[in-house]
Image (cartoon, rainbow, N blue to C red):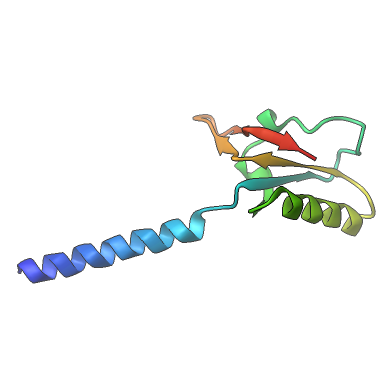
Length: 101
């Protein structure tokens, strides 16, 4: 019985590690808003929830390139911002350590 419990614990541990690796995003979060024009209004990240994130990237450059690509695909409409280490609070609202465009 003791060997079975050890195997079960190992399978559970490996499963948790794999799940954690699959859900962990990059350091930079892309937030693209199709209704805002560049220079018109700033994207208010604090008023957005996690579903506003359009992707996760390891570098700021990757995030910027994807944001520009999304604007081009939309006919130069919308605007984007890249947030560093974004997290949600208890109400589900986004908070980022830094924002860049």
